[in-house]
Image (tube, rainbow, N blue to C red):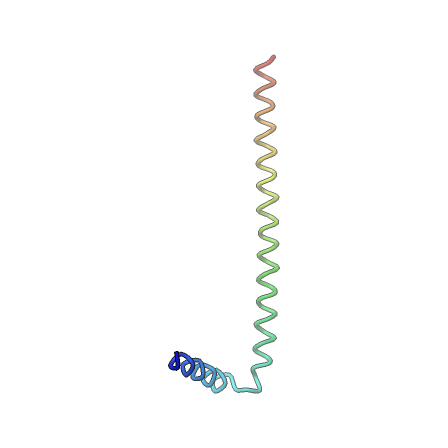
Length: 73
């Protein structure tokens, strides 16, 4: 467990060295903006899929009703 702590300290030190401490707030803003954009795109995609599923179900139901009506005629 102690070695796990030191590995996290090493990761944090490397991040600060690589990105420089003054650039971390800019990195945070960029990551937040990117994550928000990704979530928005995922929500939009899910909405499109739900609409397509509803459309296919409605078409299938209509075909079923049409076939039942033609059988009764």
